[in-house]
Image 1 (spheres, rainbow, N blue to C red):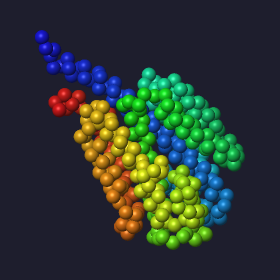
Image 2 (cartoon, one colour):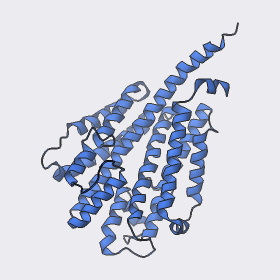
Image 3 (cartoon, one colour):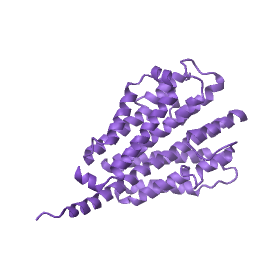
Image 4 (cartoon, helix red, strand yellow):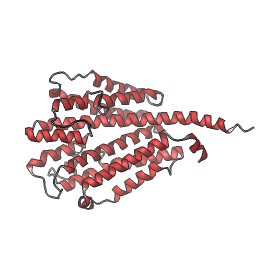
Length: 335
């Protein structure tokens, strides 16, 4: 005798609820950790540049950091120490390093059975390192070591994850979270930078602008790679091409979108939702980046191009949430 339909609905609800909960936690764990690493790197770069800049230029760089990290509620004259403490220690700021690492750990704690012991131990170790740090007087003078430990802790977690976790659906959601976040944060950083500079050309930058461009490359973990691929001479057009369209640079927009697209296709195959909206939007964005020419981007406006990338990234995130985390059981049964 065939079970009634409500039996299938209840069974699907239990299984789908568990799978969506796991996917949601792994996805957000990865996004929060990527955000913490990005914030630590930008703060480290800005504090080092601060030492080589005049007070006037330095004040502009702190405002740049606020915009690049999309910090809300920071109006008027900025106090660098207060801003740094807000970005590192504030629990009220959901994007601070402490908040992000804490949220990443909490998300992983909910799905510990899906991860390896080594993953949990590493993230817990990073969490303890972060919360034990206090905004004591003079802490900012010795902050380089702290910011490096956050970046290295995140990198170590990624390596441990790749080496100890089965590369199945859960691992793919971790990759997806990392590259959705990276695409958005990189595009926001570059968008902020290009809005504050003159129209880019293929001429070398002058000495007054040099540190700002070095800061952008270091903020994208790309300074040494750029110097090896191009030269130590910084040309805005070549920097934009390198950071936006390079398919091999881990912190380029195109690389991040390629990895996002790959993860979505594999998840689509594993969940039999290949033709759903997230894969289609990501595929469209990947094609756009693959066939774009930097001269065309510059002529139309690089800031507008990056804003469009961010808009499509937000669409992808919304579609991921709708299709994989908050979907309707009845709709899935009917499809």
